[in-house]
Image (tube, rainbow, N blue to C red; front, side, top):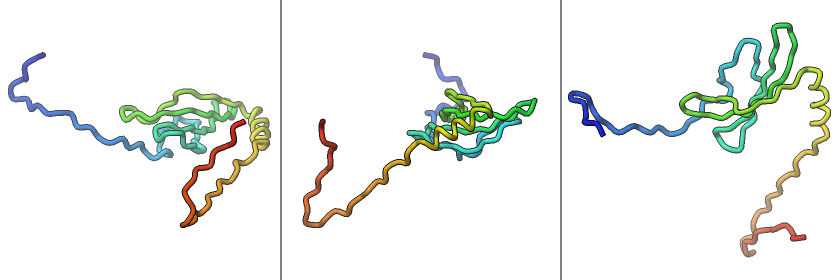
Length: 122
C-alpha cells in the first residue's frame, strides 16, 4: 500500500443513486429514428424500436435489447433487424396474438378471512 501524497486531499468515493435517463433521449446515428421504447423487466433494461434508412433508401426496423450503465448510458446487448419486406409478415403474426386476460381484483369482504387463490394441480 502506498503512502498518501503530501498536500493531496484524501477522501472516500461518493456513491450516487442509480437514476436512468429518460428513455427518449438516446443518441442515434443519422438515418435512424427511435420509434419507441418498451420497458424491460427491470429499470435498467428496455427494448428500443428503431427505423433505419440506409444510404440507398432501404428501410428496416431494428429491435434492440438495451441495458443501462451509469458509466456509458444505454447500450445494446443484442438486436435483430427486419428488412421492410418482412414487416408485413411480422404485423400479420402479431395480429394473431390474443390479448392478455384482464386482471380481476375483487374487493375483500370485511368479515371474510383473507385467502390466496392457487391454480388447481393437475
